[in-house]
Length: 273
Ligand SMILES: NC(=O)c1ccc[n+]([C@@H]2O[C@H](COP(=O)([O-])OP(=O)(O)OC[C@H]3O[C@@H](n4cnc5c(N)ncnc54)[C@H](O)[C@@H]3O)[C@@H](O)[C@H]2O)c1
Image (cartoon, protein in one colour):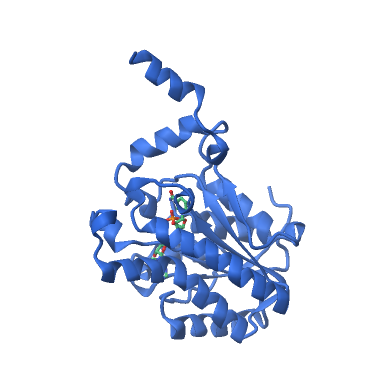
C-alpha cells in the first residue's frame, strides 16, 4: 500500500543486479512510494539485462552505468542524474559488495593482496568516492539521506566472510567520518543498515551460506529479515521521518545482534548429550 512516503523525492539506487538484489526491492518500493529514481550498476552488470526490466517497473527510470570504483564514472552519474531530475538528489542507496578473495575461495589468512585492495575499493572506498563527488558537485539536497548496506561481520568474526569483514568495517567508519563532515556542511545524513543474511547473488558467494542462513534464522527472535523488509527500512531512512538519524550503524536483523543463544539452538545440543 502506498502512502506516498517519498513523494517529490529523487534518488539514485546503486546495485540492482537481478530481482533478488536488495537494491531491486528498494527501487520498486521507492517508486511505489512516489519517488523518482535513477538506476546504476557497473557496466559489466548491465550486460545481464535485468536492470532494464527494473527500469520499466519503475516508470522507465534512466539507467546510467557507473563502475563505483571510478571517479569519472561517478561524476558522470551525478551530473546526468541532476540533469534528468532538473536539480539535486534527495537520497542515495549504496548496495555494492564484492570480494575476489571470497569468490575464489582464498582463506582470510592467505589473501591475494591485489584482490584484497579490490575488495576494499569496490565494497567500501566506493562509498567515500561517491560522497566526495556528490559533495564537490553539491549534488545532494539539505536533509538528504545516504544509506549503505553492511553486515555484522564488521563487529564480530564470521570466518567464511573473509576480507569482506574488513571492507564492512571500513564502510561503517566512512559512514561515521563522512557523516560528520557532510552533516556540518549540508545537513546530509549518512547511515549503514546491517542486514540479516539474505539469499542474493552476493550473499550466496559466501561458503556455507545456506547452513548459515538457517543458523541466523534460529538465533533471531523475529527470524531473518528479508530483502523486502530491508527495503522498508531503507525507505524510512530516505523519508523526512528520520531527519536526525545520522552516522549510525543500524541493525536490521530480527534481533540476531543482541542474542547470545536461542532456545532452539540450545535444544539441538541437548539432543546430542
Ligand atoms: N545478501 C546478504 O546476505 C547481505 C547481508 C548484509 C549486507 N549485504 C550487503 O547488501 C549489499 C547488496 O548486496 P546483495 O545481497 O543485494 O547482492 P547483489 O549481488 O544483488 O548486489 C551486489 C551489487 O554490487 C554491484 N557491484 C559489484 N561491483 C561493482 C562496481 N565496481 N561498481 C558498481 N557496482 C558494483 C553488483 O553488480 C551487484 O549489483 C552489499 O553491500 C552486501 O554486502 C548483503
